[in-house]
Every structure is written in C-alpha cells, then in structure tokens.
Length: 474
Ligand code: C2E
Ligand code: MG
Ligand code: MG
View 1 (tube, rainbow, N blue to C red):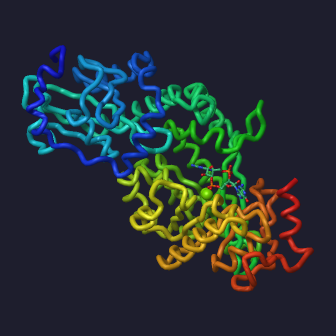
View 2: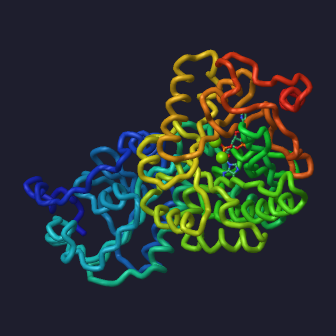
View 3: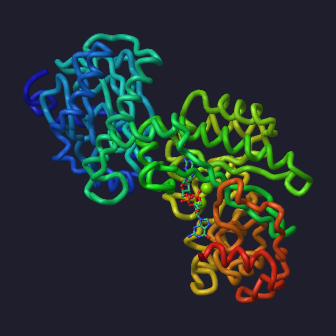
C-alpha cells in the first residue's frame, strides 16, 4: 500500500463511502474508548504479536488492531498498513464496531457497504475483509481486529473464531493501558492473573455462595442466587468483583460460568430433595455476555440442568445490561434458552445505559431493581419514585420484581407496600456457603400489610428479620 493514505483517498471521494450508523450507545462507547491510553498502546509488542499472529494464521498481507474514536480510527498495531490513523468514515472497521459483531466480506465489490469504498475501488484493491469487535471492560465495542486481502477469498467460521480469540486476548492486554490505573483491572497483570485464575478453576478453588430471595407473600425463601467466590490460598475468600472482570477479559468466564452453573444446579437439586419446605426452591445464576455468546451455551445449560435432575423452569439466568450490550450475539441464545423453559431476569435494573430499551427488546421474566435505589428508600423521595415506577413498569410488562439490597426493616416495608413480590438483601440473609444457609426460615412479611413507607415490617420482634439483620451487620 502507498505510504500516505491521504494521497490515494482524495477528499472528493469521501462522499462515495457508505458509512455505518453509529453504535446504539455511541457516547458511552466513545467514553469507553477514551478510558484507554491510546498513545501508550501503540507499539505494544504484545499487541503487535497478536496482529502478526492474525495475519499469519489467516494468510493475509494486511491486519490491524484498531481503537475507533469519534472521527478517527487509530491502529494500535498493524501489518501491511502504512498509516497509524485513518479518518473514521474511511475505515472498513466502522461497520464491525458499530454493529458490535463480526463482519466477513469475501468479495468487497459484491457488498454494497464496501463496493464504492476508495480502498476497494482505488489502487489498493482491497478485495476481502474480516473484522471482529474488540470489547472493552464495559462490554462496549471499542475497536476491532481485522484482516484484509487483495484477492477475493472465503473466511470460514474457524477463521472468525480465531480472530475473536485474538481479539479477547487484545482486550485483556488493553486493560493494562487504561487511564483509571488502580481501579478495576488497570495496573494489574491481567495475563498473569487470568493464568492463575484458570488454574484456580481447574484446581477447584472456586466456591459458590447462596443468597436467599424471599417471597413477601409467603415470607418463605423462593429462590437462591448463586454468587461465586474464589478461595485464594494466600489472600483468602475473594469477592467476584476481584476476579470476574479478569475472567470476562478472556474466554475464561465461560469455564467459570459453567462451573458455577453445574455446582449450583447440583446444590439446589439436593435442597429440593431435602424436604417439602424447599421442594419448590428456584435457582438464579448470573451470566456474562461472553458466556451467552458462546455457541454451546444452550446445550451447556440443558446439560447442567439434566445432570442435576432440575427442571428448566427452576433456573433463572440473571443478565446485567453489560451482558446484553452484546445484544446482537446473545438474542438467539436467549430466545432458545427461554424456549426450553429457563427464566430470564434483567439484573441491576436502572443502572445501565438504556434499561428501558433492554426491557423492550429482551424477553425477560423478571426485573431486579438495583440496590442503589433501595438504599435511598425512606430517605430519598427520588429513589422512592424510581423504585415505585420500576416495580409498576415491570408488572405492567408481566414481569416479576425482585428488589435487591434490602438492608433495613423500613426498606422492606417500603418494598412490600409497593407491591413487589420478592426481596433480597442483607436484612433477610447475606450470601453464605451452602452448609450455612437456613432456607426453612420464614419472615413475617406480607405484601399489602405494610402500612406506610416508614412502617416497620418485622412485626414479630423475635423473628428471623431481627436475627439476620444482626448477622449481616457483624
Ligand atoms: P449481583 O448479581 O447484583 O449480586 C448481588 C450482589 O449484591 C452480591 O455481591 C451480594 O453480595 C450483594 N448484596 C446482596 N444483598 C446486599 C445488601 O443488602 N446490601 C449490599 N450493599 N449488597 C448486597 P457479590 O456477591 O459481591 O457479587 C457482585 C456481582 O458479581 C454480582 O452482582 C454479579 O453481577 C457478579 N457475579 C457474582 N457471581 C457471578 C458469577 O457466577 N458469574 C458472573 N458472570 N458474575 C457473577
Ligand atoms: Mg445477580
Ligand atoms: Mg444485581
């Protein structure tokens, strides 16, 4: 390719390019892009090695790893590309990033998005393109990994899978170049940590704790949410916030998720078999976007259920909005899973980029109102209004509601008065190891019995509410 791209892409040609629409969350996506130290990443030998591996494996003369800014695409690592930056509207990868899914074009001249592109129609003769998005920590596509050929050719599923694997590795490396050093994964040796975590999964160091979800109509435990922990040999019991992001930066989260699902299904089946009080116990498991985008996810869930002898409708998969940002990839799997009887919940409702759009587009059975709203119940009128509106909205859409993060009796009374059927929080029970869970306790709480937002819900002073509140605080 010529040394100066601007020489071969005259400004007058710009109007010919079929531009991609912006990503649905473009401003959040751009914020995510700007959280990476782009200049520092350029020339990173590990990123360069990944791009060279892509070109070598797929046998293409050109490959690149990009960060897609508002007006410009930066190439962090490249093979066969002379320029480090390209105007965004002239980037072939803009379609990959905007759509947040792989774009594979065996013959660019036969594709309306590319046929008139100066790099296709001009002397560069770009004839084939394959690109996959690179997802940042927030689950938004920050850039792409792509290969380009000067002859038409087929790219197979294995080629795309390889690119996706390399893109995940690149995403993990990019975490080392974030502005918010000290927070999240920044400043941490993600590769070393993910290797250590992989061994931990294999060596059985992961633990599953369970937090009850209480049915406010009966006062009984209706379900448990499985919450993963890492029993680290040196650092003790680590919460998921310390290691799930590392797992999510690679495909390790798939193995982690399967482990949690298998173990939790087995445990809940044992509880259901233990007696009539827990015979109808349901299980909620958190799922990450990458897990749901995995081709074998439906079979893996069915296998975990059948191995434990658990009916599909005993399982709810909790999806955060970050998981759903991979929307285009996960929709089919979610619909198939729901077709098998598995329930779906929208977790942390109200905290993501576009909660309402997700509620409109995804077939969920349950909404979990985030604990940041619960925390303000009784003290912040605005939190009260948002919680009430969320409960009402979910009910109108035919969804069940779980209010998370209930820590005080006043909050529980408020939740009950709003008509939400389910509550979860330290007041009722904190997450605990299976052996320490008491799932037969009942709470003296009933929907509609609370007299006002500030009325105490625990009418029996010796009931479990008091005792567990004491436990959680200790
Ligand atoms: P989440 O799914 O929203 O889980 C609820 C979190 O809120 C848990 O934190 C729980 O301990 C905490 N919590 C429960 N009641 C209260 C309360 O009354 N007050 C307060 N302040 N917090 C409460 P945890 O266990 O640290 O989990 C954090 C997040 O990690 C989870 O949020 C979930 O998104 C993720 N996670 C946990 N386990 C898994 C897993 O197996 N796979 C995946 N992909 N993510 C997981
Ligand atoms: Mg959850
Ligand atoms: Mg939550």
